[in-house]
Figure 1 (tube, rainbow, N blue to C red):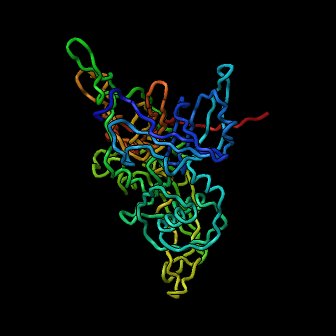
Figure 2 (figure 1 turned 90 degrees about the horizontal axis):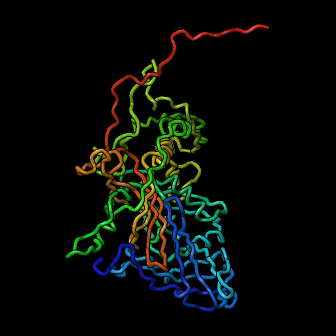
Figure 3 (figure 1 turned 90 degrees about the vertical axis):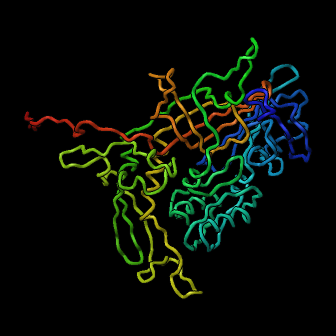
Length: 470
């Protein structure tokens, strides 16, 4: 970032409007603000472009929500690597709505254009009715290229098992939800697949693959950086980029919700229509905790449960030993001899050779994980932005220990590696300032929870029933 003079500086390389009338217009000079939103639970990047207009651009160029935007944004000092820029100059954004409009003078108005990835529009226009065969990731890739017709980068983690589906007149993205439920990684058998888009492309991959990538930056709560320079103060830009401008710890650890939703314990009843059997499996949060890598990847000593496993009743049960608190129902159809999917016969091999769903081994863990990721350690931060940042990346966060801030001690409970789950880019054209609002989370605690006394619920020893009469 040698060319950056101030943290958050950016340049608008391209901003062109292609209107429904067929007119291409450079609107860089009209810009006031650009907002882009991305989320690991969302299949599209969305945003808004706010402009000031004194030439009746909306009416003259015929902007009606059937238009396109070419957009390219860049942090000075970065090269044109697609991993470091936000580039929609070739794969354009779709304008789907003309939003707020209000007059600021007799001859000028401010208007907002709502934009979204073009693939999201294509998805709503198309449905799929056909049978498909392959691994879930092969099927995903084929539908993205042939049906959605995306030309963007697609990041795919290969899944295992050849499957067959009959897609019943569904939008492609709706069908992808089923693929997510059925996908298991070739690498470590992880079922924790996500489908999302960020400004770098589309992703169909596990949480573990996100965790394994190199962290994209280190951020800390502190004062903005300044350097003494012969009586004057100049900014330490690198330190400015590392400084968290605002930080908020979100609510976490809602025990009641975690019981109801199945984070801690659950029971799965699987009905096999082929063999006419019902089997059950209990899920225990503590038993399954280190089944797959967590946020710290290979540094397993930094990954610890959010709760303590101390007994809470006279029978010696801990909080994860009540499977009936949440009951899931799953259906399957497995051939008794081959263990294959009995819903689809393979005429080539003359057997039930396609892989069945593996929900009995994966579903409860996946439900628990997604709840945990949303409710364990979550925080919102405001940072000086750069165009290389995106949701799905990991960062290091350092928070000083309030009791010993001057001694350089850090808060070990809240510091550590976080996954960016959602991100909002705000490009203020007037101030030439790029800021990002980041939601981030981790699925473990860096320190093991301690317990120094019994957690058995205190109760009266002489409860009684009073019979009333009248």
